[in-house]
Length: 182
Image (cartoon, rainbow, N blue to C red):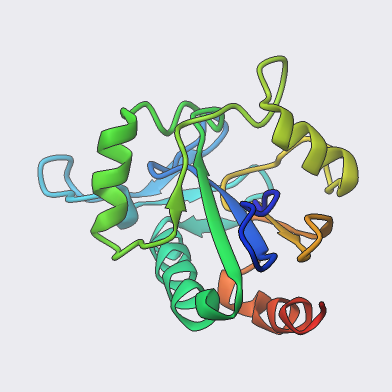
């Protein structure tokens, strides 16, 4: 999700992403999986979502790569990506902040990683209350899933909310548009 820009001399365009690094949900049933002892990560699994569609967790590995690519391409122009790990999506991120950080390093993450937060229900952090109140989604203000993204302009205003299934790299034209605005 995109968050309020961190204040610096030059305003930034920011993206905040709910990152849930271990991806599974109680409502999903496993579709295919390697032998437990052979699996090296959750990215080897697929599941059937509530609508009967197959979901490959491999695509979430690509989310990290694409976010790293966006950061590399646009950070010098003022893009700030801020990732907020969250354990509210099927209890998928039970790890400590340090373990989450170490995992992110396997993808070469250089953008800002925040401590684990709640983005829904009674313990939602104020930043996410603000973002959700300004840009609702298909479930109203509720954050549907990890990798929900909010794009904020240089003035810190949320301008676009992206669903979890929107590839980070596909929002590059919007990032460019808001980076050009002063």
